[in-house]
Image 1 (cartoon, chains in turn red, yellow):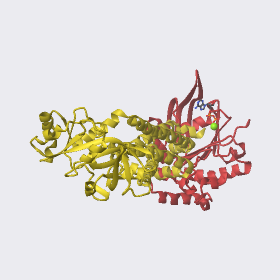
Image 2 (tube, rainbow over the protein chains, first blue to last red; image 1 turned 60 degrees about the vertical axis):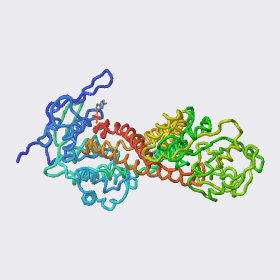
Image 3 (cartoon, rainbow over the protein chains, first blue to last red; image 1 turned 30 degrees about the vertical axis):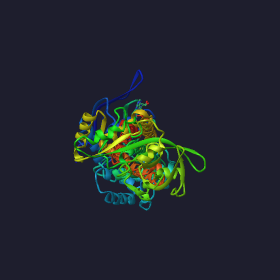
Length: 235
Length: 377
Ligand SMILES: Nc1ncnc2c1ncn2[C@@H]1O[C@H](COP(=O)(O)OP(=O)(O)O)[C@@H](O)[C@H]1O
Ligand SMILES: [Mg+2]
């Protein structure tokens, strides 16, 4: 059964102006991201990965081009509609986790549900269930600063998944981790984040985990130079 | 989300207390200073209100307040009595004198001579003794502020004074509102006061008038002015004159105005800085919330809730602090009868709301400006 792509970008470019200079970071990117796959976005530092993923998840406006997420042309939405769209459809895993220090782990994981208007206690219960899948249910009552870095990341992952978004995005999740923990996190993401009707894009340049991807896109100087199930030979 | 906002704020105890302190400090300063200001101003009218039975005060046209008056000829009394609508009119003398206390100190006092027959001119209530003691020779009645000033911690009853080198014996204590300067006041009979006050020809300060119809006091005062050529003020007008005199002739409004403005500015500074620091410390979390899908409208409500909590707690503490201040000084006669007019807490509430609206808005601008894309940086 061939589905419509989860994300569809056409002619996406992005310029940044720094002082007098304008640099073009992305040069007309056409991409289709499918649901049910773990997609890696790979490339050298500065190649435009973060810029691309930010545009695909609706937090950075492209200079030109269109982005459809599950059929919605997201940059045609009003500001408020776009925020609502993100809240209901996208899960974010930030590199720095950005947990709220004053509320416990489960409440942090429950934030998207609370923002959607769900009762705080019910949202927290759902978050604890999600934390159980990530094997950290026993940390539910702890404050972020009482958790290890790895545990905090799992809370951040729980927060990205708790509202069952159709798209999950993640920028360099293993950058700060050693080889074995990096692999564990990727394994975990494969297990909990990838689903039939969910697209999952991970930005990484960590060659230790390339074998876990279903699809690898390589970005170089703002262009996609490779699209396949494995890394090209020269890398 | 409001719950999260409140937890974010209270979770940072240092900043939360800083913010509450800033608001409490401003509230205390503004409420307390305005309270003292208003009460002090009202002291300008105490001379009028201590003589509660007079509906109209008649005086020389140049006289301004109970304490700034020019003497009338004694014929004024009969002239006023002749005006229709006047039920009674009595002489009233107010003068400065010096008293030599037993310890040899010299103290400036106000001598008030009240009508010999009716004793109109005395405060309504006595703390000790009865008004009748004035019929004994050389009797004076001291006011309670004067008592605590001249005889701290002891009873003044029976004490002898030298009042402008004349003998005076204290035989009663009157319950009076102190004057603006808290001067010691000695009440005596009009005829006796004439002995105490050095003899110029005219020594009658005021004629106090009771109206046949007190509700027509204003009309009566105008009639008295027309028929006698003297100045006549109703009780309320004359009280107002006393307050205006202080406003016009002292630096008090300016001084208090400056202190209140400082309270406001210090509040803005403390709260503004702390609020901005708090927001800056949490800017990443706010950015994450924005990326996840919290609208700017909800962010505004979150910051508003934080400001409201700070305002509620800080304002409450500030008002309680003012009450504690007034209560702890209530035994001090200078603060006798001090109260907080209801307008003052409302004014400080408005000030606090302004401080929080201003500083909250400044802090909020940083959050609203934050690009959600910054979370991946
Ligand atoms: N907000 C910005 N302002 C100016 N230049 C930017 C901005 N964001 C990214 N860039 C530039 O765009 C290029 C690509 O950045 P980025 O997308 O972060 O690459 P990557 O994530 O692959 O390292 C870099 O040269 C970076 O300096
Ligand atoms: Mg990057």
